[in-house]
Length: 135
Image (tube, rainbow, N blue to C red):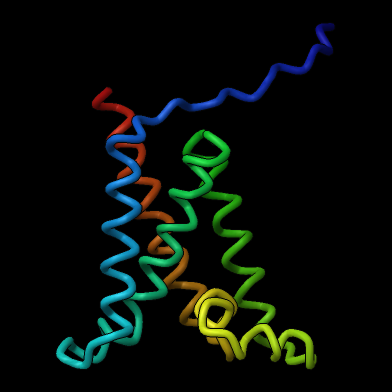
């Protein structure tokens, strides 16, 4: 019986493609928070959708994870962040008082956000697989 552990496969992604993709996702997500000229559902959900997708792509790039592993870790990360919104200790509220942390941690737990994160990360994984298959 072979008990050797296989090293995890690192995926080498083309930074010339993924960095602009991340910047585009960031710009689109930021713009949904700065305008009122969009349909209500875009203003309500697109930012969270794109934020979750960006988390997925960051795991892909920074840790060079396989698509499936990045998908699972991004889901766990975004779900945990959403769950923190159920808690309001003073130190976390202090962090949330800063715009950057407020955007990351949010304020209130919503079940629909779990769905939106799942959809954003899933689309990111599909895009990643399609890009990797073309290479």
